[in-house]
Length: 355
Image 1 (cartoon, rainbow, N blue to C red):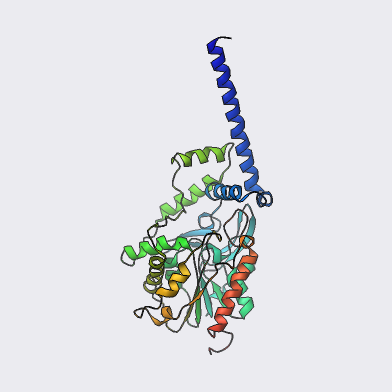
Image 2 (tube, rainbow, N blue to C red):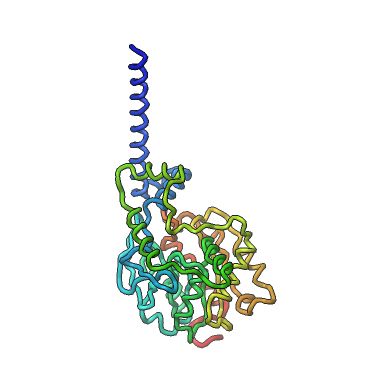
């Protein structure tokens, strides 16, 4: 056999093996992304990789879903009033959205006792409307609770949104913090207590990008993993860039600064309850511990010094989150609602006149 024929034969064998490997990888990822019941039983390293593939290349974002969200010049976006269905691999839920663009009833807007601020976790991403933690809290306490949480909002927009709501009978606000709040809070402080809001064209591009990125085509996962490895992929529209130099104390001070400066609503006399929920319950965080230390500064308003902090560390486990989606299940929402209900009771926020 000539040298050239040997070389071509070797090339053919290598090419065949590469094609088979690519096909097997693509088919495996395709199946594991769409069969979370199977993925649950894979080794942790495999499950973690599948979660990343899903988050980067498959997940729908409600804030960029034209059926469920709309542009807002003051906040970037709100939910779209009316009814819509929001779906991903592990869930499909109906959203009933009131006139303020919140996942709650119209009646809940009228003089609520408690306003629940947060991002997608508190909004109830992945669970039925009545299973979201604000609605679960209302059932447990008998208080009128407004779910004012919107996907990907940081503390700045949460506080700005509060200014649009009826706070005439407000007795408590509950704030669900997430580690990806810090970029928004940092941007707010760095810009002299203002927040740059995306333009309508930018928002429209984000909705189109998200819809396009979710479409499947043969070889998609392997191809896009390759692009990402080579750093050739377009930047994702909803990936917050966390500052690695921020200490927990820095993060806590940013949160307090934003809470105090980003809104006009007077919170004196209002009980403020804060807890943290992130996408990775296995990764230790010390934000709440740092906030406990930092909040005692005498220069802060009384409502900051008196904040009630709930430590969720060790209270939430893998079973409280979806298998491949990094959001709380119905059980996880209920666990948080129970902790908040106890905190409200301890602060004297119960049905009837204030104690």
